[in-house]
Image (cartoon, rainbow, N blue to C red):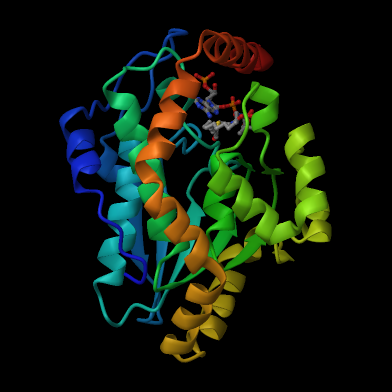
Length: 291
Ligand SMILES: CCCCC/C=C\CCC/C=C/CC(=O)SCCNC(=O)CCNC(=O)[C@H](O)C(C)(C)COP(=O)(O)OP(=O)(O)OC[C@H]1O[C@@H](n2cnc3c(N)ncnc32)[C@H](O)[C@@H]1OP(=O)(O)O
């Protein structure tokens, strides 16, 4: 790992509190399969390129366990010296990732909440700072923390869906480090407008503002992703890693140094009554939308 971070205590806490099936505060029951199945890795015909697939139906939301599983998969891939690139994608038909699992935020378990945020921070460290070349094969919606997964990749191709940081629509603001990732990618003014309005961009608009690098046809996603991965792998690894350190090292270190404050800030923010009201309202809208 290039930007290895220590998070033992938080991740240990996450294991203790892991629950794989639960009913949310609005009465919906979540994922039936065990977290071990939520993330799978596959080889490709090129031994230097692997695929990491998110399989947590219905929306690949990032719960504590989901964050931990993705982090674990990245670390396992990195531990194989032959592996130089990973393609991050979703096995769901229309959703890349719907972002943070809102059941973690709404009426949260007070002990679990800090561990959850610690696991999300760790996922950012592991993906954004990976020694691997990371290709985001975004094959569906990627709002909020789903967009963070995409932004953490080195190269982003997208076939369909919407992408962006829509947190303001939930009555919240993206955490500073995620906001910074967005600003660093598309520039301050565009980010300012999009963050305030909670804009979700379709593929064309996302390409226009530089949020993604390429639009690809639905049937071509994996082929294009492999081609791009090969191009990244062709660059000598020390150069790739040094470039990543140059462009991402400062942001990663900043959060590393402020990790505890960031967890405390998040927890006190989420526990506010007004915040809980907004989340409850948003959640109800989400459920009603379908009906
Ligand atoms: C001042 C400084 C402040 C610092 C603050 C610090 C911290 C606060 C930071 C908080 C950060 C938040 C980041 C986030 O990621 S918040 C999550 C944001 N995500 C969303 O808003 C996405 C919501 N989902 C959707 O819009 C849609 O689901 C969709 C992705 C467009 C897909 O639509 P569709 O294909 O129609 O699928 P459904 O809507 O039917 O969804 C299927 C299923 O999944 C449930 N679901 C979807 N998203 C979430 C989610 N994020 N969490 C939990 N559950 C989700 C949805 O309700 C459906 O469930 P049912 O089948 O049971 O109805």
